[in-house]
Length: 400
Image 1 (tube, rainbow, N blue to C red):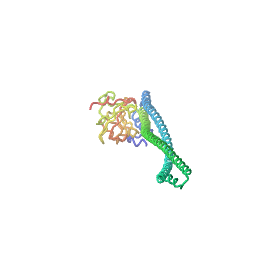
Image 2: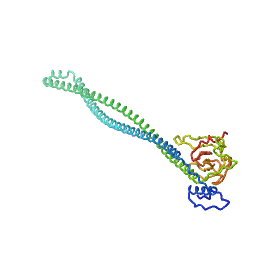
Image 3: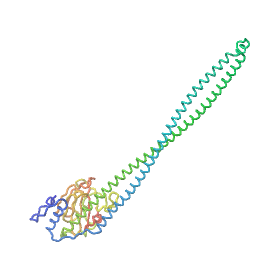
C-alpha cells in the first residue's frame, strides 16, 4: 500500500517519494512527511537492553517448551510400557485360550471313553442279570436230571464249573469297569476344575487388559492434548516474537527517521507529566503492565483496557501521529510521537481517525475502540515508550 493512502495531502508541493509495498513504503511516507517539517534526524534509540529482554522472553518460552517436551517424552515412554504390557497380556490370554481348547478336547475324549465304558458296563450287567435269571429258573433242575439219568453227572459238574467261572469273570470285569469309570470321572472332575481355574484366570487377564487399555487411551488423550498445547505454544511464541519484532522494527525506523517534535509553549514536556496524563479511554484494566502472556514468561509491554463499543480513544498528550495503520498482533494501531523520545501507542481499534503527519492535542479523539487485534471484544491496547523502551503506563496516567 502506498504512502498517499495514509498521509494527508500537503498544502504546498512536496518531493515525490518512491512507492514501496508493505511497511517499508508506509515508513518512507511517514519519514517524508516528518522531514518536511524539521531537518533534524533523531538518533537510533533501540537499546541493547531491549534486545536482551527480547532474548530473555524467547528463552522463557523455550524453557516452557523444554519442560513440555520432557513431559511429552515421559508420556511416550509410559505409553510404550503400557503397549508392551498389553501385548504380554494378550499373549498370555492366547496361551490360556489354547490350553483351554486342549483341555476341552481332552474332556470330550474322556466323556467319549466314559460313555463307551458305561455302554459296556450296561451290557455286562444285562448279561450277568440274564445268568442270574437262568440260574434262578433252573434252581434244582440239574440234580433232578441226574437222578432221572437225563444228564451225565460229570458233564453237569463241568457245566457248573464253567458257569461259576463265567459268573466270576463277569463280576471281576464289572468291578474293573467300575474302577475305570471312577478314575475317568475323577479325571473329568479335575479337568473341569482346571477349566474353571483357567476361565477365572482368563477373566482376570481380560480385566487387567481392559484396565490397561483404558489407561493407555487416557494417556494417549493426555499426550494428544500436550502435543496440541505445545503446538499452540510454539505457534503463539512465534507469533508473539514476530509481533514484537515488527513493532520494535517499526519504532526503531520511526525513531531513526523523525525529527524531535518541538513542544509548543502552551504545552508541558511529556517528561514532566508523570502520574498526570489523562486516560486514553474509560474502562477496566484487564491485563496490566509486566503481566505474563499466556502463562509463559513473555511480559505485557502495556495495558489492555476493556471499553464500550464505539468508545472514543483519545491522545494522552500533544504530539504528532507517526503511524496509523494495521499491524499484525496490534490490529489498527496509532502511534504518536510526543517529543523528547516519548511515544504512545493505541492498538486494537475498529477505526482510525488520524493519519500520519497529523498533530493532535491531549484529549483529542484519534480512534474508535474495537477488537481488530484479537477478536475478543472491544478493547484498547495502550503503551508508553521512552527511547523505544516500554514504560509502565500506570505510573504516567493520573487518577480517575
